[in-house]
Image (cartoon, rainbow, N blue to C red; front, top):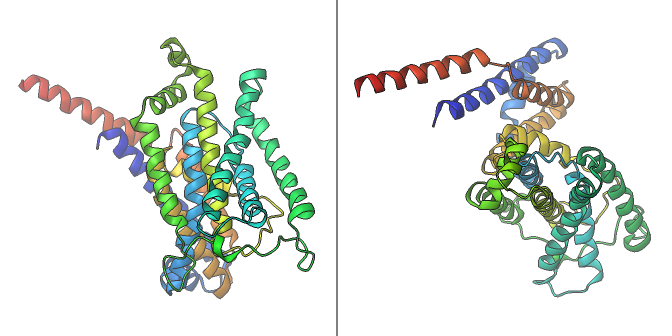
Length: 355
């Protein structure tokens, strides 16, 4: 590991540590039993198999959207439509399993394929608008999320609604559900799919020519253009691939054991969580499972703490915000970085003198 990567790792760990310490200080101020609250936050997920299952279950959608955003952001395409793409993927999966009448083994496969396709088409819209009209993908993608939300609500209420239960679809067929792989929990085969997606995302970004073009464009678009890289291709491919992953994630989440019906009337927020995952993973899809594990563990611990102590869930939002601010702050630990670079330079000079 070179000094740059070592510094990034140390900086990330220190940011997390500082954020947790600040959160613990706040708990001491607002709680009558702060030590109990902190102990519950840290150890709560380990107290039962079900709690650990909640951590892993929460990881799954975070891995999908985090990986998709890593690919987009690596090309410097700040597309925020993964939230809407995830939502749309869930709707498409529900529509397929409820309306197509496919056999059990085929139904979830077709549903996930079409969910991924819907996510790709949706997240490519900001890319096309940028290419054709120079519209910033940040603005157009943000607005598209609301279109996705209300479009999905319209389809739900007019084509999928079960009148006997209100704002929810008919019950999803049991033969379309993704199998549970750990008894006593809701950990399902979607975890395996998510991990495979993260690995494939890494291979795509770091082991293929197209991935190299995406990363080079993200680092320096002017140089990439001068080098002959097709910038239009980069814009379209990065956002399309990110959309595929987001849509697939929505389908996997919907077909898991947690949702017996499609009832998503509002965006679930996984697109915003993906930015946190991407930041923690340093845009590397291979690290998204670890970042998702940390965030899921923190949120599960906070949920348990909120149930058994006088500290509310909002403390996690504070921790997340502090981590993001410290990670993106260029001057945070800059002195350490300069010392590491200087030390590496001196070592290289000594090696040259000896030679």
